[in-house]
Length: 542
Image (cartoon, rainbow, N blue to C red):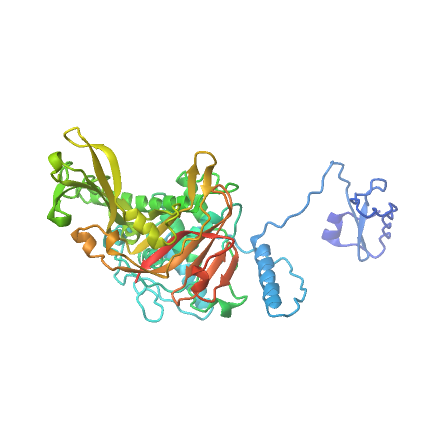
């Protein structure tokens, strides 16, 4: 009698056991070329398996079981495949033949556990650094690159402390470039995250919170927490990209950011549908600002302060106030919208526009002009006119006076009024949105494909600034280009997004989801490209 599997495992099998029978041969002819091979149906399945001299009986399973195709789901497997891809690509670029190697599926890595606090997040980094022989100081002694202060050196104790007292820092340590996986039409998100990562003030703000604040993760600031965990995935490394070779960290999916956006009811689909990069950046940055403002509001209310920031103009009164304007004329000032709470986001991206309306008075007498102040976090520039060929042309058009025919003055007379928009306060990081998509009555939304030239250094012209004391402080302010987001394709609802960013060393790097390339010089960023057009420009004050 043939022993069962349980008998083999308990007491083994004696040498006197009867030899097992050989499974029947498969007599089915092989499938013809072009046909799909199928499982043999005529031959019954084997009833025993021979392992050495041991025969093991197998019970038959009469269920109608289908064998599915197997697709590895382990992320470590795909990481190994990506490393092999980079090795082959590097070999091809060096003119060497890529040697075929077998990449076995590695053991699955332990699942990442969401940290309970920033301290736990930092302890994981410190332990990994210590294991590799590198010591990284955290806490009250932030890390620095080349001796340059990269985060606020003051000791913060709470998130509220950071938001109340943080001051902008323009230097940041270099991070190693790392690709982001496009898990389904997510290129619009990937380019925005890469551009913000290489925006030095924004990155320094997140590091100041991560390295100085110890608090538990909560649901009140999901976007802020997700962005801090996102930058934690990048290690500090100033090595030029060309010297890194295949030593880059493998790409990853920013799943924490996806989940935070779902909690905010933003882009509920998140996969399978193309979105606009500028719209996504607006939701992301505004969302972080709102989280910070609510934290500050709750903190001030708890401390017995007045509560939220004032909702009218700072001078008190809904009717506005008077200021001395151009040619020593009186100007009636008013805030068109609620004053935004002061947060690190407004310190980085926040600026103010002045909309000046001049209306002739009765009998040709000059009436006081009226000016509204409006906050902005990026400037939307119309580039559809044939006269606009450069960014400077678009800013000239933005600040040009606009005549309004048939405007009714207070006496009920139709007069020709003049409206003019100017910059009153400019932010440290000036984001310019080139309005590539315009609506046509006959053809719907169309893209403006023409090349718009943009400089490496942008100096604010006096014609773009308002004639106020606040604006006078920004006269001849200079900005340096730090990032460009491109749109590929012809339609607003489709296409593809890539970006070029500037590292602290001056090296320009191009990101196309998981593909990363080093650009020879800034000229490669400024020149016209046949397959893409600049869509969003990042300028940082210098």
